[in-house]
Image 1 (cartoon, rainbow, N blue to C red):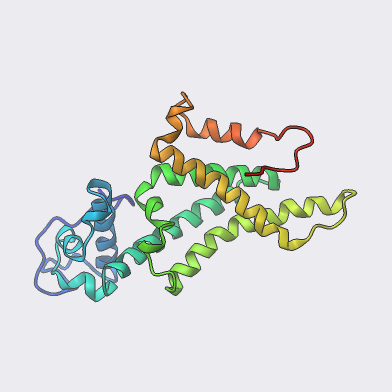
Image 2: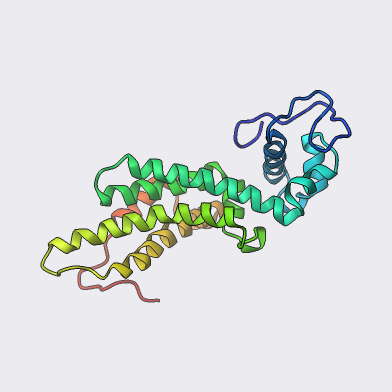
Length: 228
């Protein structure tokens, strides 16, 4: 069973690139089956075992099928990471839409971010590695920036709250650094957790509990921010 819940093809395929003799693939299903195969390889053996030939073997199609759909290995990985970003953006938006206040939205999105990293690790560990995708691919660019726009939108809403207090209107360009700060916080936690680094310092087994403690933590009085 693949990461997306779709079964892999297990019956032998014919010699046609896109149609097995059983006729079970239709309307782009082969492309998705190949991407499912990539996910299975990643989960079982890691990135070093991903190849066009192995994806074809897993999907039960001719060796030429992946090249027909993706061109080369980088094209196949780009399609895989693009699909990951589509699911990622969908889950972040759902988390944001489930809350009313910007303060609650940003926390909910942070938890959704961590949940995606834990539950869809084979996507997460490739999506932010530049050598694993073609950054000039338009579909990849659209989906990845779409996911980040969820965070920037909430950052803008948080800044708008300050427009009503004594400090006056905020500089709208400061939404981006605020979004980067939130992104870095949860991405760093997700990466440290998946790598097992936090276990040296944290004896809990619930990443979401730890995240909530991080969200609620405040800098000492008088601190303007973190300096490294």
